[in-house]
Image 1 (tube, protein in one colour):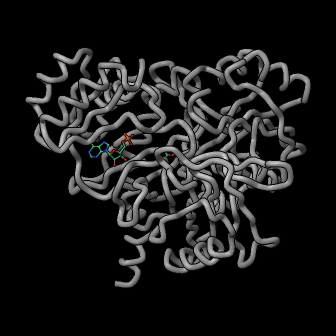
Image 2 (cartoon, rainbow, N blue to C red):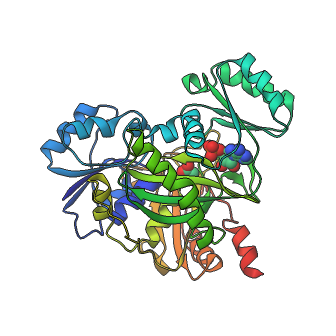
Length: 424
Ligand code: AMP
Ligand code: GLY
């Protein structure tokens, strides 16, 4: 089978790397891809926003499966357009992708399905929102309803800060995404990510991870897309995973199906492990970035076959995904200035071989002639396996230290919580 993979970041490089190992793959195309992905895929130029052009490419290249990496094309209905033309797609329909595309949609679904999540109010105007603050206490959690490239959540420490943030949101800071705002109860606990594959009916638990969202060591400073991650996340014990499946994932999948919006693809649940058990913080309708990199490093199954089974509604009950028992850890090397204005064009020299089993996924790179250069905020994802987080961390940083990227930086403490626990 030929596969078309859409996207260009570290998540997509990890998917491409794993798909290239799938016995069921004939040829992999990646649009637009990145220089790292050219090792296993043919890079093609296609605009995911032009549904007809993607469909034509699929017909002309005998594509048996389209894998959509990022959320925007899914929220935009690309999967629907392709399926209407008989093309199999890994990723949810536009209606089902509302689980990521609309915070209020997901909160209302949680209400209907009895899914544990933070209490909330859905507001439609600044005046509404300001009076709704009376129902909460600081810190205030304010979320632009729509997609805001991961920047639409504000945690305000005081009422004055909350009112100012609400004024910005309703004032158009996030464009249309902020025309409605969800205000939430602040949850306390440790955050962890839980992944599941589903074909709309059957569900396959697909691993756990934890990431580091803040740019600075010790988890301080501005939010980023994620500066590193590891998998599995030992805090999500077998018992907590079973509870998350029973109380959160299963009712989501069954309610979406019952309401005529069956969800297929990967469901990525951001969970808060509270004293009352796991609560849903948010859903994403795609793999996490960089969580995908650590999941793929551990996956032992044929990814292409699993994705096609999801797309064709034949995932079947009773499967178990096979993951390496080792821990995978990834360190994000970013361009100086990230997450503000990252320096572009900095030279990167990678060692000629990837020693010690580490894998360097490209996230924001391009070629300037023969020279690999930085072209984004998050540039490389240096990923390694180890017996536990401490071991994987040592292997990943050894590989980081072998990379020459003077205009880059990384956090040196990825995995710190778990390293401290492993130390006892
Ligand atoms: P989201 O984009 O919804 O994942 O929110 C971004 C981050 O804000 C999450 O990863 C949490 O760290 C934090 N957050 C979101 N909602 C809450 C909540 N209700 N209580 C506490 N922290 C939250
Ligand atoms: N690393 C967080 C995300 O992909 O949403």
